[in-house]
Image (cartoon, rainbow, N blue to C red; front, side, top):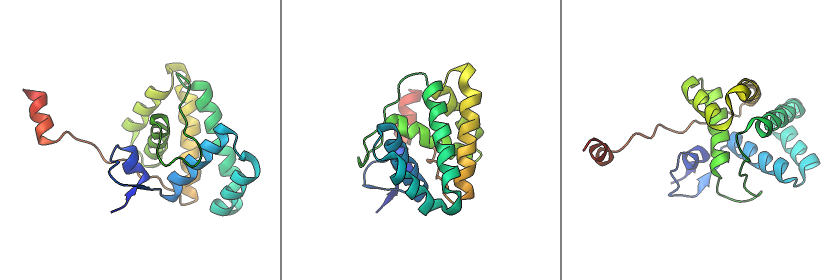
Length: 161
């Protein structure tokens, strides 16, 4: 049984994650850009291969989003090393933010913004996250939002007891 990266994001880590193309591209590029590993030509070529003639614009949108994220974030972000199969909590938050923007989940989008950025900085991060979400959707790179994780019956009973 395979699982999507967003299942891994949601905490369902019983199996090796299978990255969807959108999740894979975002995490891979994010790590390369933040860690400075072969950022220029390698990342540019991947975006050109994935997004065609829009590759430069989508990459520029991701770069703008990352700059906004770095400058608006409440604290220093934890980003994994390129090639690492597991996600950091901050990478999960970023993926959930973009997925919520793509899928019209405004309450989740707002919650992710509140978690990542201070009050005054949220409009900037929201604008760049929505721009990135739109650029990815336009290039058929839709992220799958994690399923709601409702408490199980046992957990609900424990919570009400």
